[in-house]
Image (cartoon, rainbow, N blue to C red):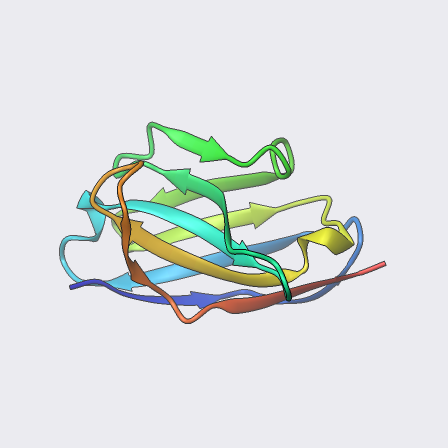
Length: 119
């Protein structure tokens, strides 16, 4: 069982930055691939970024490539999403999730954190 708690969301102006954190409980965190998803009002949830258990493989949606960076610290049971050059279209609730491996179904989810980017 893995429990996930996101933090770091907030209101920021376009062009600004935020860093989201996702703290995980459980001794097996380091064995899970992690992903950041987002869901904007009226839109489907989308995968924004993902990282393998070791951190050696990452994935980014085209819409965030070059602006967002996913990383993890297995010693701290935490995964991060550094978001730079934010745009109003990045406004959404951001969720972290855990999967047994990259490309597999995400089994555990956090409660989400709101990110609002003003123009």
